[in-house]
Amino acid sequence: MSDQQPTMKIENTIKPWWKSKTMWVSIITIVAGAFSGLVDQNLVTNPKIVSVILTVVGILNLVLRMVTSTPVVAKKPTAEPK
Image 1 (cartoon, rainbow, N blue to C red):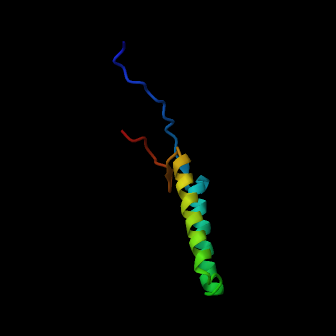
Image 2 (image 1 turned 30 degrees about the vertical axis):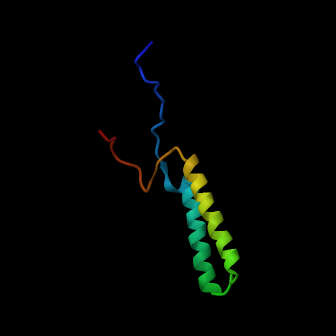
Image 3 (image 1 turned 120 degrees about the vertical axis):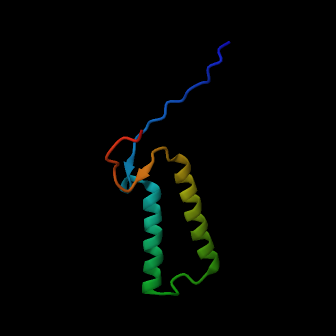
């Protein structure tokens, strides 16, 4: 029997923020919220609809976070970390 632990190869890549689905869901949520507040403050008055929308956005962000394997950065690092 070997005392070696199984190893997992992890891809060490970095992607820019604009390629992140999680970031785009958040941006769309922010824009929709700001737009509805600016255009008509009573756009969605039914609390059940607001609750469903918030729940769906929360679940979508959780799912996207679980399937994310690549870190996101605002700008690409200039040097490799030691």
